[in-house]
Image 1: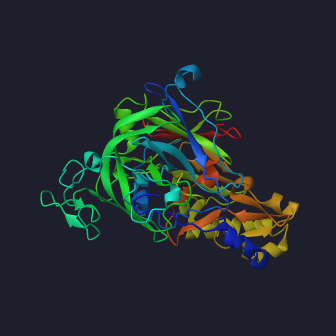
Image 2 (image 1 turned 90 degrees about the horizontal axis):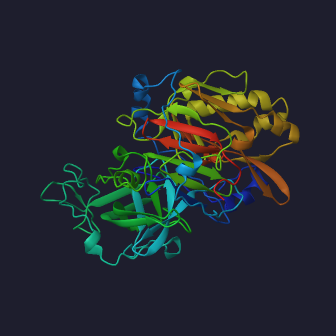
Image 3 (image 1 turned 180 degrees about the horizontal axis):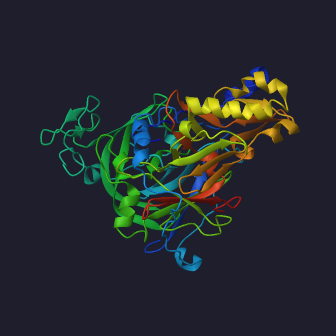
Length: 475
């Protein structure tokens, strides 16, 4: 979820019933490292966040940036390694809550004005936003923050340091007479924030600045920017989650006002010692490690490293690809699948239309030999579609392998991209691949893949590291 991003929710419970009919369903730190618990949303149905329109506004920039990307086969990040004792000094790891269904979103508990609210952890956006008591229709069950002094934290739309000139648009309620910046139409004295989503959901809010805390990690920030949500559409967030914490770069934060992202402020204030964070996701929750690489409590084996594309060109964590193959003998699909974005705010794995078609063709060429009826099944339509599989058919599904410019390899096994769902005593397998857009070569790695890895976002040397996660990491 982000600036003009996707947050499409497909309700699993309704379409589980449809599986029986048509074989298809929708699945649904202070000067040291800090570890923040992430809660996987505990729910009876799963919600899928497709990336259909999430990156359409940056896809051209991503693809154009590949020619100027740094990195290469000899890339080896110069990362200072600290001992486990030093890395986790004053850190805290708490149990995480969730359920086994390997789909949904991950969130942390944020403290504001003596209250707490769940915020989704999203590496594909850069804004912090949450519902407040002035919101016209925000569900109270999702969590609401009651700001005790609205005027004390409000950022006026005349503030030229954040409400930049030229950002006023037709969606703003008014323009500042001083700098022609966007004023919130629901609070005309405040900077306006407008977040929209691919399923048609949206958020209108007012920009504020004040203290926030991360109780699970024992951290606090004196002056953090956040969007106080004043109106959201019914599908913006679901139960237990009232907001979003974007961990991408400031270049992605203008919507249309341009506040500094929370993690940037944490590093500048010395709340975290290093400009690094790590995310460990599992089927039962995860952890956000602030200020360092996650150690062996969260991962198995060493990290593989890739360099991400320059943030001046791409405000998200995107890496260029050398090879993209399905199975050991598959064709190199790089021309259809480059670059790759690491995004904890997308549920599945999303590919461009051509890449999706090519990947499905490669998988079917192997699988249909083991189970001929699958060749004509609706299972191969855009995810999430599900079907019954024999053991032989399941074992025939090949791995997907991505080799980056650094020669680091990310292996996506059938156990990762096929999602198991039990229904009426039978085991269904659901395809975890979706179409990002009809054209374009962008690939988005969402929670479907990230839940198998512990991922480091090293902003000191523009690199991403990944290693297999410890089962139940963070607990």
